[in-house]
Image (tube, rainbow, N blue to C red):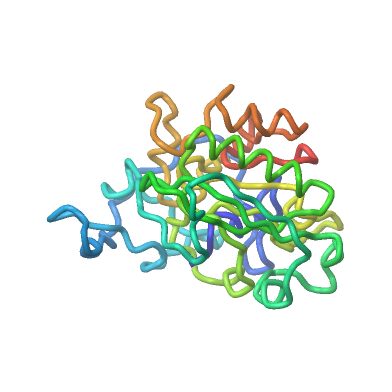
Length: 283
């Protein structure tokens, strides 16, 4: 699965495609109709209501467009009102209260991240965060994130406000280097920050490559430019007229929390419209 974050690095504002994936068209036309993809729902986990199905994220690669991105398809019924449970990889907060930690990146985390010596930021200028968050399952969890050390404390303060407001986050984790070249499945929803990726054909890097940008619940807050939607199955979330859990809206707790630390929301942009994206650089 190519996660929303990695895909965003290949477009304006968050980066560029790999050499095999040329840049998308900039037409502002709506995505063309297409057949609903085959369901990737699986049996419900133990304890879930009878008959409930849970979408298997990353199971089915999408057919590719001529530009190398996944084909933009209608949102599957299981994801129209997305509310998938969080899989704990770190112990949840024992007392149910917000907790955060800022430390140098542990060697094992650095090894699985996208950092390399050629990145525009040194490993010593990055920090590893662990932070509490509320899942769509209405339970507290612990996530992880890599950011620039200059913004580490401020970012933990932002997520403290989101935790207090019980703003739901499905997943918060470090992007693995193996995901950079994985086939797109169009259903990722991981909240993340640092990804080392240069802008194609230029000398500049994405704000994510400096650890100065965070993307939140990308499926619920997709990227749109012309007929390209990322994640590719998130088209139903382009309609912001009906609020759903995980959606970021102008003036809400998410925008206010990031504005308070001087960050810019991509949802205020005209083209592209990057609803998941907050950055210290404004890009």
